[in-house]
Image 1 (cartoon, rainbow, N blue to C red):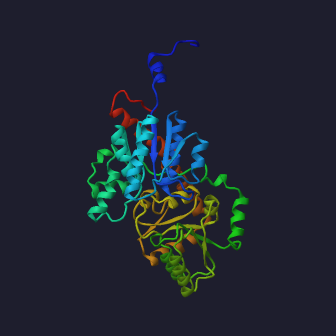
Image 2: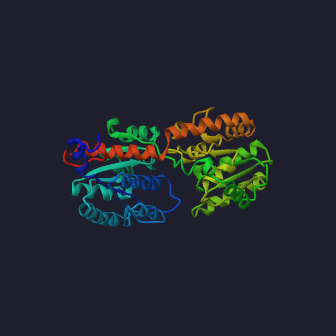
Image 3: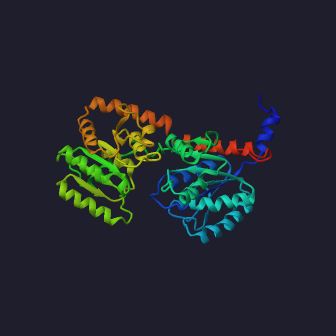
Length: 404
């Protein structure tokens, strides 16, 4: 009935204040990985929920996304591992927490986590962490202690089952404190229907790709563990010169490794097959150019964004059989897995994928896009993170606010 007064429960819900969330990370440079992208996506989701959303970092181009969403950003040298800077950041973060009545501090990286952990304790507010990787040097006592700050959250978010198992096995964190939240793909951006033919044609022209030539793509920054050298070895074993392989990613100053790859290409006689491409700003269009997308990491990926994004675009994916790829790729259904570092096995799978018929590709595209949309969307990642915030606040002080 129109004009009926709202219930007491509804009235109380309207009066409840929503919590203030402060996320802390090293920087927000463009082209960053899951740490940066995840922080921005969640910050915007918090703001859209009606809660107050804050981010502290050393800044970067992605700050503009936060500003457009009315998310406050605080520029602090949180990228620094200098002990004196880490100590100085404690006071700055505590000041932000107190002035803005922050309820939850959520950290995503180790150096700033030490500052944020101390600041949260001083201000007596909730502390949450997201484990984005296995981190190096866990076998060393000092390094393990340094890494362990990421296990000190009231709730520890793991971005894959692989990472969840790692946290439990390496640091002894009880499963009850871990919340599995896979990284989310922006399915509005990584949607084949949203990529115009003009964008694809423009990239093909920039990269001088001949018409009708099959394209194999390995996206990833130029670093040894991403497997570019092993990919070149696999292509040599495949023995086909009627294809093009694009190694897409910046060397980020690793000129020595890039020169190694160029030398290897000359030695293998693959200069006409493999092209090294700098960072690409339009990855959705880039994926549309590919007949096969490869993630050849020799070390386990914590999640494996490339495999998920490429499947969202309906591309056949080939990934190393370890880490997060085991969760994002369904073998022989949405893609293929091969033994890590095995160039011969990769060559065999590449040959199989390049020979797929149109009907097989159509079935794979439908299955892969459906699987990613169901399980790995940005919306699901954000809603589950907000649910963790709810859980943390509700389990602590009864008078603290909750997300609705």
